[in-house]
Amino acid sequence: MVTLTDTHCHLNDPAFDGRVGEVLARAAAVGVTQVIVPGWDRESSLKAVELAEQYHAVRAAVGLHPWFVTESDDLSWLSPLLGDPRIVAVGEIGLDGAIEHDDPVKQEAVFRTQLTLAAEHGLPVLVHCRRRWDRLLPSLQELPSRGIMHAFSGSLETMRLLLALGFYLSFTGSVTRQNAKRVHQVAVAVPADHLLVETDAPAIGLETVPAEQVGPDCIPTILNFIARLRGESPDVLSARVADNLHALLTP
Image 1 (cartoon, one colour):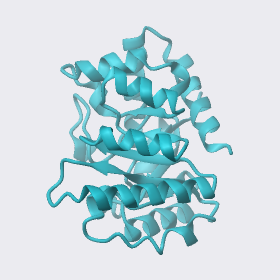
Image 2 (cartoon, rainbow, N blue to C red):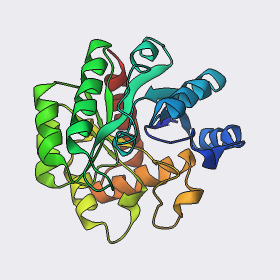
Image 3 (cartoon, one colour):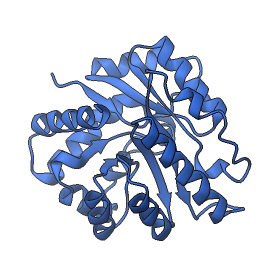
Image 4 (spheres, rainbow, N blue to C red):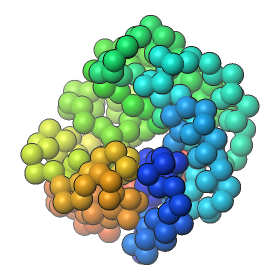
């Protein structure tokens, strides 16, 4: 059996308190043996590292999410963490133009600082973007990075631009929704060697699973759905996705 990874799952969210072990056991039973847990601020990043210390299946990512940049742009805590071998990426970071009290200048400054830190430490980035592609793409071009565009739901043109920058596109359970036609189109078009899967639990549901019930054990359902869309063997695509993540995480 090919072992799978949930490349973006918030097991550090309070929704999972007291049941992380149970959630990971269910995931392992269906072949999902690794989960990347990203932070969104200092506290959640430290909790991701703590989970990586406690559970062999967990790998941590640390960073300041754009939703929290308006509260603080202090990143003094981030750099000292980045030498920890349990940390495999900087994230969740990015730009978001769909939040209240949006401060695009501060968001972009924080994003660019985190891109620079990731490059200095040889780490990939886990990137979030909503309604700010016009600023995010130039930042990625000016500050070359490697990483994952998390929960991708952009256009084919944006897909092509990201692929030209060497990014991987990661798809969530939203791809299983029958009305998600644009996501279906991109999931078919993306080259197999740049495709990844994630749950973004507990934030995004599947067609038949509400967000609050989603966990890493949903990864095979997401991957199998994408394989059907593409007319590919689920086993072959699973192996390709596993190889993609290994290539990304191997310096």
